[in-house]
Length: 561
Image (cartoon, rainbow, N blue to C red):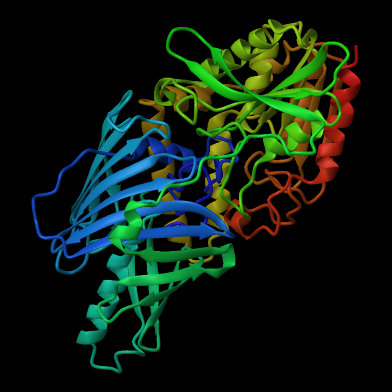
């Protein structure tokens, strides 16, 4: 179970948790790559259901996941929906010792129709001290062996129902223990199916009705019944609460739809639009337009980071991080229109992200620019781009073929290739996980490198990202560039800002500005640590006004008539 639920799909490639889009923030990170190894179709045998209901996960007032489940004597069937993320359906075969010997997972795109096929599937089978993962879907058709330990309990991403296997096992061990049943502490190995990391979960009873679980540096305080069923709980450090509801209540639950409307007092209006990019991709979005404009207005297109996100670049942290909504509001009050789009396969947008690369996403942005230039209320000579994380990689790809763009803003845009970035992110996470021994860190590094190579051979997006060198494109861009960077960013490190600026300048571009904000992380929130594992503990979900001020002042200057 992942309390942060943060990034992209809340899972990791090698280490238990978000990188964000690594928590999506959006850079192809370990968390994102793990999406490529998840999913599968399976049906369980007709059996008597012994327990049915749903778990609701909330983070600081924001409902971030609903997990419907049905448990039989030897299986768990789950339908898990994470806000603005993929939908997971899985069937877990359960054993008498509370392990999960086999797990079949299906992953559906966030806006998939009820009868749509799964985008990706996987069958994971425990064999001794290994998990055999058979992955299918899109361009994936691989089998991987993940080394673990015999008796480890498989844990699908963000699943409370599978986490319940641990608390039920704890209760069984307590009953069999020779010591006081409510004093015995137990350590149970778990293997994260989204990444392959094997960790120890330490379970400590608190009285007769509670168990505290510590795993991967995260503490869960859970209320349980005598057999170990989870009745509710919390991960206090990250503001997550867990509630259990019955079947009748679960049947009525839905995750709320996002509200993209303009505030009542806003000096701008909002318009729902669609952008066509070829026969197979229709992008839905929101265009905010300044009111009472006396002439055509300037406009920008926002570009999200890695992983699939909605037009606000929503992340379920600190009550909901929506940087592009903030940016649209700030620019709208300065007379600049903003077009923000749902990514392929998300919200109102069609298209299959599993077969797409950053080059395809750049094509989507070109189509959006063309759309704006065709409007009578937009000045076609005053259009810019704002890209965050991977979006900062995509913006130059668009600008290099469109000299009519007036300006581009790169927020934490990468200068290194994807292999360097992912390797750094993995190493940083491993070095800052105090629960790991040196030998375990070395083992996880080797596993991570092997998985990256495997995914690079099967996933078009991963293959492009691993090899692409942003500085090559930067040298060809001639439009004005603003580079914004946080000094404590642990996803796109701070030195990459000046490296990227040097690449732009070396190609003859003399209009390049860099702002590095002290103690700001990848999300442009004040954060002295910058560790993605701490995103869910942030006290605010807002981009710092100082960052917004620098962005809007520069754009206002560059987008003048």
